[in-house]
Length: 226
Image (cartoon, rainbow, N blue to C red; front, side, top):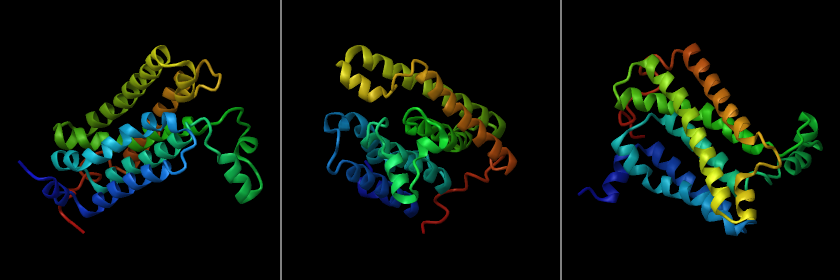
């Protein structure tokens, strides 16, 4: 059986650093945690994914570009999880920097950080998914892009079903905090639409730059260790 140290060394150096950044961000997000009762639900799955990432990347290698897309999404999610998404104080941060708040400038009636992360899910994970099924599922380039687009919609629907089930079985306040609907009855549909729009834009970019039509976005990540 291969040791953990051997698995770690088999992962490209750049991707090892990304894993370290992800784990460090999770721990940083839990310093003086404002909502400790929900922190495990928000950050537990992300930490588990980061810990098993070396085994996953050794078994199914990805390019550094795809790994970076996944890292950026996880960092956005980790920040949102610290504030239960609904309470990310981006308006306060914007006022401190520019004197203006984002909500006032854009005319937002609710905290929009959750919608941003749903958009980022589609925009950032379409390319890694397309690369994964092309490289490890022997799928043609065009079909891999279609699969990635469908995957985003499927994953988004599953997540919304999970949130609904949580609202059924969890205590009212816990479910409300985690779901973050903020009084919008169409929140699940809008979240799924945001992810799908992000995925569609990613497909346009991949096709325009021809990075979804071969191996351009998926060079062998083990070809260079440094």
